[in-house]
Image (cartoon, one colour):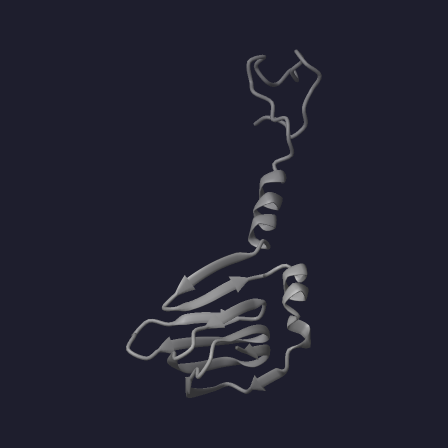
Length: 137
């Protein structure tokens, strides 16, 4: 097996054939790059609910999220109808939201910036207590 360090150009350790490829980079570089990708913001829309995971602090500041009122609840299950559009940012918690008329759900949790459309009726199934900032428009 080749060593994880590069040798001077044109040299090879005596136990390797001279045509053996020698890696130029540490094998740890790729896993670190994958970790960075996972921490980036990602936005999706499913069943009419928009979810942005890990929005940047500058985006949260731009929208004034930390100045919005807060709401929380313990693990529970309840129906809800949005009389106006709600945008919320979950500080803590884990929720499955089941829009009426669908057997599917959208899962949201801590670090998600979520937009629920005006008129949506759904059931919230809270598995981990929620603490969130919210704004109705």
